[in-house]
Image 1 (tube, one colour):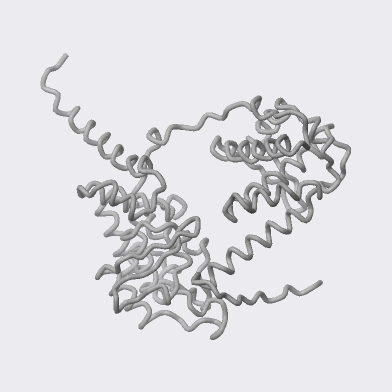
Image 2 (tube, rainbow, N blue to C red):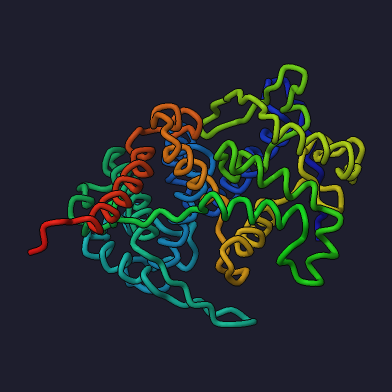
Length: 372
């Protein structure tokens, strides 16, 4: 078995090494999938590379790979045995009804492997993304003359719930305090959890404070470095979606929590000159915490605040919703909140204000004086 070679970054940009490395690894995954696809689609791959962010590009490629596997195993539209053998003529035989049948198949399907049978179930949001991926693909085929007609107009619509109809789940003020107290005192943790907590309590509390103070996305917190922070100037840099950068002021509470963690608990990096040497939040092994580890940590402490089991704890995204909702409840401008959270569209921020107005309407109903 060939041993994986170490990746070394020679970074001349102003972006941190860890972000450049992450994008490089995503691009390698894209290249690996593309290498197993028909060579006639090289133009499509260039189109994705030039128009989509790396993670979106990877998602589109994975959806296309799944569709090709479906064509081979579940239809008679191609005689190909491998994805690389699929030809434009095979794709020209695909009709819109075939895509609609494929999307219905995606709602619930099973995959048999040596160890088990896996059942996959997709909701309408996941189906809409797959529909979008396949639609972009067939529009490209038509535009470049690989097929003679555009079949995408015949794709069945997939109904998604209106954003305003979705309940916005977040922590209330008192629940935020319970969560932070649990990280500080260990209250509500099991005996086994307390063994780890004793070694990570300063880190955990600092991470939770950064989440609820700034409403960061999981990926934004995950990639924070020591060099992201300029404590003398009282600010730190975060890297947003689409390559955007933003400077944030360091609040007194967050500054104290981070300094206490860095000076008193942050372990030495596993490798003095390794890729994690600059990472802010490290595991006990001296490695940058993974997004999965951060997500589990948040679920643990939020479940204590909510009084539920660990699996019912909130995700980091709901801490982001907590920041937005609590700021708006305190009377802050939705435009300021939009800027803080980096919402592309003000209507996204307005959802939190609308949620608050709905709560007010329910209260007013309790004081109807004219009874029917």
